[in-house]
Length: 251
Image 1: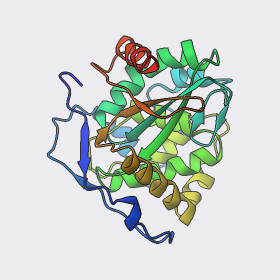
Image 2: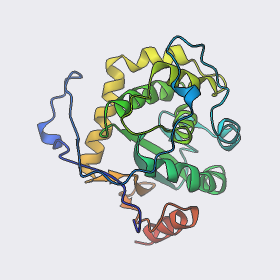
Image 3: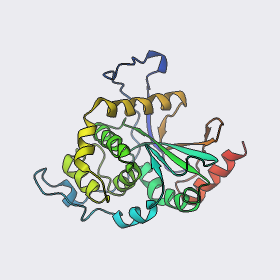
Image 4: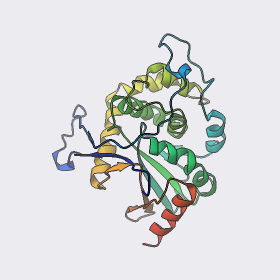
């Protein structure tokens, strides 16, 4: 990317060294810190765990609801499974550059290409920045089981707190979840503690290793029946994303 350094990580465990046990944990080591421009979370989102959470005060709730309403979700995928191509995005939910992409570039792509059935989106949620990343990623796994992971991640990015500040509490997650119509927050929190949630993180780590992903956000165009082609983004804007997809499509 041009002027903005993405969130970087290294030392992903090679796939050949992976123990298939669900209890195996892999640690991605954080690289030299990029200058972070994360949006400070509202004080109401950092309230006591004993407070009664609601969806009020969640930034972007109406926008995200309108953006995603009526679009098919399956697991971590958004859009028609018969679409001629899929864009796979590797993210860390604490990454401020992922948040910029989510708010500035993806809405246009979703409205133009995903809603029309020409493109499908798929998330790979990594957790290398710190404990808040893992907590958020595990909750995302629970949201995926309810076909609501895109609502959750889009709202999370719009309400992202200061990196590794401990802001991803149950109360924070409940507030985000309460802004998603039809979402069972308790069920998602319970799923986050199950081995299957760790399985999702492990699959994302392995996929990142196979594709040599070294930063977030990293995106690939995968034509139906074809191989992944990395998107070379010049910026985190809608026009830059469209241009990167066009360039990858003709490679």
